[in-house]
Image (cartoon, rainbow, N blue to C red):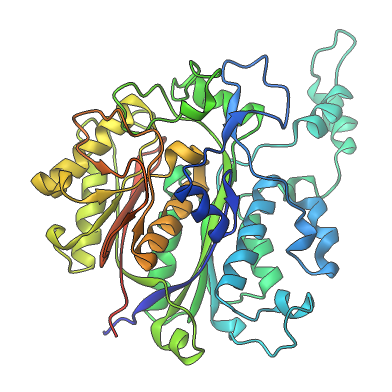
Length: 445
């Protein structure tokens, strides 16, 4: 069976250095850092007090007026996904139900809703602590201790009946597909930081085998809340030593790296069958030609030092693309800034690319925006695809003191002009061991 070619026609991102692909890309070129002291809440009681927070936005600017009541049952992760979806759709110049109802296009739609799918990665959505704490306080006994019987009889009644719908991982895809009327196969991927790459890979295969013509895919997650910032600290994964210099805190693959920095953000991209994109005259950023995935069974909480699962994903993606390593012009490693995970990832890249690793230009967004869970990979993918389309490699912030074992050739100062034909991007879960890699190339006429 001949598989259809799949291209990228729309990019929608929300990052601490800019919302929308143009603002984000400009931030990378200008070497802006979105990491600073947390403003969403008072972090003074936490060991980590810095993060990458999104610029302010109003959700009503990205959904039809008739849908604004639904915002009441959207956690921040969902809002970020809806925001990214709007940017992806408008960047691709798709005329969806949302675009028509907002009065931005008279219609008709230029995508068949029954052939429009979705694959969106989601993380462990944090409950609204103030809302939950208020209800829990009404279930305390006379000594102030939580009483399960009182919770069942009284406390739970202080939560809205739709409260749970704000925190289910599949609600990101639910709201995005309703807003844009995407009725083809839809799926939610919950594999931590690997979620976006896995979602994009699944969408790629859905279109390639003919089950959809268009897919919106990627992921989103908010990590700037007390629970999300405390949990990885307990595992020793976050940087707690650079609260006084946030702009230098996230140092991927650096010799002095001290842990990851958490953030808000996400990315959704539009994938289309090549013939569908050409029929509607769409702008084409590039083509997905390879997808690979792997998993480490060594530990659920620590990486395999050999990076074997990452190497498996890279090899599978290159084999799927029928592209040898010596044809790759750009690498986009993940680089969380944690000592053991960066070392394991570097080992995998060294194993797959060998002596060529130090010759191929590389890029990472981690120094600028940190790690935002399920949305991280999609942001990296969008940056990689933009570099491919614009023949430009942006500087990689905080990579000037590299660990010699990594051997990546990051751009340090000014953006670099480069003719890029093939690029590889990878992501992996910090818990669970899932990995995924994607190969993109310029579209061959």
